[in-house]
Each structure stands twice: as structure tokens, then as C-alpha cells.
Image (cartoon, rainbow, N blue to C red; front, side, top):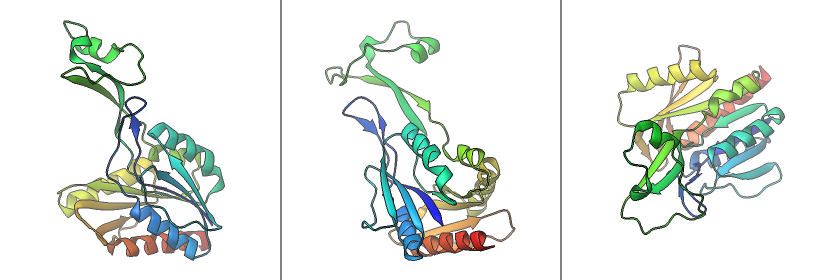
Length: 232
């Protein structure tokens, strides 16, 4: 099988030297890639710039990813080649439209002016202003394109919440699975992730929910479910 794995985090540029990113390490994506490689499969790993990477080997292709648009373009490019997608990357929900000194903004400032204002083009934002204002816009939801582009691909998505009840986490996961047409969603809570300990629930269209407790177990289960689907 050929597998596409996304791991780590995206970095959305503010200017040529600054960006908005997140703390995702890509450790689960790395483990999952190694598990697939250990079973003789080919892996294309789309990795954020700070993501942990498996050691180089013959069946592994690593491609570094910048921002969300870059990720979307790469997924579209490599999706036709693969049988399985494991979309574990922490994708930014928002990206900067502009950042400007408060004194440079139009006065009086209406909502419309704020949205449509664009500062003069500058490669690096000046650090002279005491206060800066940044406008963010929503990024495209990469996972929502995958089944539209290739309906037959086996898709694993992830849902991360923080400090919620198990019941709420599973409800949100099921809702995301239906919304994205994913075959599986791995639902986890930030409060239950510490080192190798990683409580997660594998949700599919069956009533059975698989409870997993370590990153290794999650990686092994993803490979097992992929092989079952492929051979089935």
C-alpha cells in the first residue's frame, strides 16, 4: 500500500521573517510512518517544519510543508498516488491577512474598514510601533477536500479538544467523521496526552469505539485497520 501521512504543524507567514505556528511535534505521525514502513508499505510524509522525522529509508518520501495552502496543494498532488491518508497534522485554523501599527489604521475604524484595509507592502514589519493589530482569516479545512478528490481513499482524521467530557469528545468526533466523510476519526483530549501516554478513541461508522492508551498503540491500530480494509 501507499500511505500519505501529514504530521507536525503548519506555519502561517506574517511577513518574510515571522509566522504563526503551533506546538505540534509530529511524534505520532513519525511513529505511524515507522509502523507502516515496518510492514513493508510506502510512505509519503508531509511534515511541518519543526516535525520529528523518521530516519531515511527506501520506501519513505519526506516533503516539508509551510502554510495551510502549501499543505492543501501537496495533498491534492500526492492523493492520486495513495491508498490511505492519515491526516494527523495540526493545521492552523486562522492565517494572517495583515499586521499593522495601530496608528497606521484608518480612523474612525469600522468593521468593514478593518477587514478591507491593507497596509503598504513591506517585507518586514517595523518594530517601532508600540501596538500592532493583526487581522486573521479562516484557513480552508484540508480534511474536507480529501474524500471529494478521492472518494475511495481510506481516511483517518483527528479531533483534538481540551478539558471536555468523554461523551462530548465522542459526539464531536462522530460529527466530524460525518462532515468530512472520514472512515475513522481519532478523538483525543489534550489533558490526556503526556509523553508516550496518549488516550484516544477510534471512532468509525460502527457502534464499536476502540479505546487506545499509547502513541504506539494508536500507530499499530491505524496500520492494522488499513491492512484489514485493503485486504478485505
